[in-house]
Amino acid sequence: MDFVGSRRAVNEHVIYQIPLYVDNELQGDEQRLFEAHINACASCWAALEYERRLILAIHQARPLYATPEGLREKVEQILQNHQPISKRFSSRTRRIFVATTVVLGLMLAWFIARPTHIPLVRPSEFALVAVDTHQRYTRNQLPLEVISSSPEEISTWFAGKLPFNLKLPNYPEDLNQSKPYEIVGARLIGFKHDYAAHVVYRLHNRPISLVVTSETIAQPSGGEKIPWQGLLFHFDVINGWKVLTWSDKGLTYALVSDFEEHGQASCVVCHSGGQDQHKFEGLKFR
Amino acid sequence: MIGQGEDKEGQKSIEQAILEYLEALYGYAMSLARNPVEAEDLVQETYLRAIKGARRSMPTGDLKAWLFRILRNIWINQRRRAQGSELLLGIDIEGLESESEWTVKNQQRPDTIFEQGLLRENIRIALESLPEAFREVIVLRCMEGFSYSQIAEILGCPVGTVMSRINRARAELRRRLNKWADGFCGK
Image 1: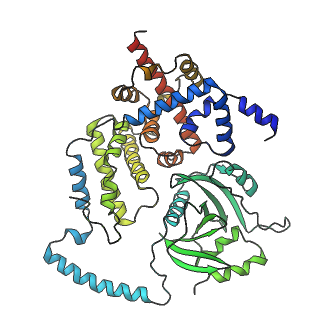
Image 2: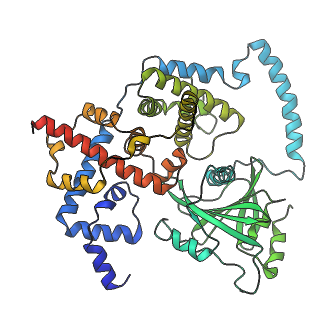
Image 3: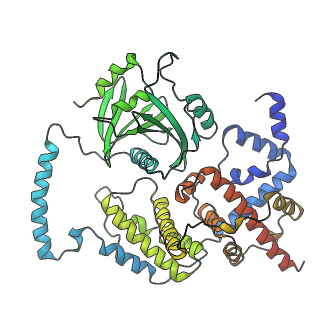
């Protein structure tokens, strides 16, 4: 922002931003301009103090309604009645059940030990959230907040909204080369009390979700580890969706799709074009 | 008694984890239903569906937001069935004064309500008098501490809608609390 623009912004009353500021929803330049104005404007300062005290009073009034006596017991009963089967059975039935479980367990152990099977290491919370986000998008439960096929436009939309800088790649850079994928749009999602980016791509009419957060907020873990091109990828299959998570240059990414094998076809959104295509071969099953 | 067992890593069972939100869920249910019997039913139904759902596949993401979303969906479906048509929460929010009007009033009468002491009962009465859509976002944001993004997920609407609704809800709440302060002062 130039000097004149900055002065104008500082001098504008910020009444409408007060709730956003109190709720920690202002970031970057918006937050700085807001604070600069508040420090110089008595009426906005008074309004901010008023809002803060109102919010505090509302929060301190919690709980407004006492939970009725006996509700906890009723809910505990509901949860008890839906305990896993092994916790509810009588001791005789349980012995039969345990014996059956042992047999099934041995079968499962054999199944897991097969050379081609993916190790059962718990997926990271970030991978779970990425899959949940993708799933809800595909069910039309999570509308996009910006619709655009332009990576620049989407990067601009994210600017100032995320606790990190996100610049979407525009592969292939050669304008004469056609893109094998298309960008559909993007939205913010909540993750660990902050915002993460959700970008939706489409490849062969199949949706791909790219979820990005700061590496300080989430580190990839769990699943099958795949070292590739100096990065460590974690691969999981969650509810039938293939998810690859990895960290690079301070950001953590999750790519969710229903593509074959490790879903490596989805990598095309950042590495399209013949030159890079062969590189994904390294992400195949070992 | 639920929740005595923890796994080897000391992690809570799903029963223990979801039971922690009982009071919060009841408060949310009351803010929607405004009827203790209906609210109690809503909470029980929420736990029933949550535990059944968790048995099928473990919930991902924020557990509290997940429970709130379940409760809200049950409430919406119940209302829809009862009304037999498309349901819109807070359809009576049109026609309320605009935010700029509140702002002017607040600047003219700073802190009156706080000088008189803002009691829980006054907040409850003011909240209960708000349109449902406003009451709901105040509870989710100011009482339960959900972020705008989480509220958007619970309500199934864009973040921008949440922002404007919270703004308008707070403005309306301020107006109603100011009215109470006026009455208290005998103005």
